[in-house]
Amino acid sequence: MSRVVYVNGKFLAEEEAKISVFDRGFLFADGVYEVTTVLDGKLVDFKSHTIRLKRSLNEITMKAACSDEELLNIHQKLIKANDLEEGCIYLQVTRGVADRNFEYPDDKIPSTLIAFTKKQGIINQPLVERGAKIITVEDLRWGRRDIKTVQLLFPSMAKMEAKSKGADDAWLVNAGKVNEGTSNNAYIVTQDNVIVTRHLSNTILHGITRVAILKCARSLNLTVEERPFSIEEAQNAKEAFVSSSTLCICPVIEIDGQMIGDGKPGVIAQRLREVYIEEAKKSAT
Ligand code: PDD
Image (cartoon, rainbow, N blue to C red; front, side, top):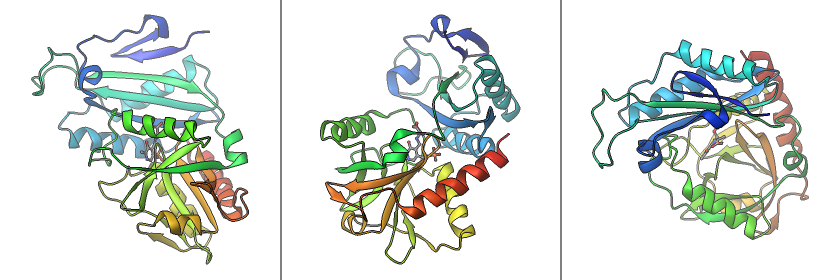
């Protein structure tokens, strides 16, 4: 059965949904996006996603596409129309349709706003149960990774490189220090049970799940250090894991062929995942 998707004010069957060949999202990757998790038919951390969306838009000097209330309404209607219990909603805003020129078109041109649902298991995921094998890849993305833009070709290339080497995903590194995963934030747990993850800057995406997880870690009396860590430190860590809206937390069991701990999903990562999901369900709207 086809999905109902949202395109510029209309809810349509996915086969009917069309975008212009002149859309700047298509020609220049001139747009930003958000992915919000749905658990029990409710949105997880929706307010934080709207705040980050506005920040991304602001950073590329685009106006808000619509009000927060309209955004919430679009999300809730899509959940209902697609009978979505568990999965996510993808939302994309681009600078709209204009003849191909490098300079931005007049800002009176309406932006393009699309959204669609994806049904997928969030609570039960085979990869989370097994734990992910990671390779490290030099981070060749642009320098504004704090903006959630739709230019995702390099992360896609890095993920394909991981797959071709029998791994599940890649961690992107500069000068031997881990920035983040292709589509997730990266963490290690030291032998003293300290949670380490890279501090916020233009180097990484400011993950919504990251904020929630650090809060859960502190509620479990775990020490958190926000600082760069090296590939070697990660390989010698007690545990490693990644976080994103769709994975929540996924344990990492191998980095560049080196087993982490005993090669099984770590106890702390699993406990954090439980606490995170409990809190996410409680606060979902
Ligand atoms: N990716 N880092 C990068 C590069 C990401 O693309 C993502 C999210 C994250 C985690 O952010 P959050 O916790 O807000 O989901 C970190 C989404 C899920 C995606 O592109 O599908």
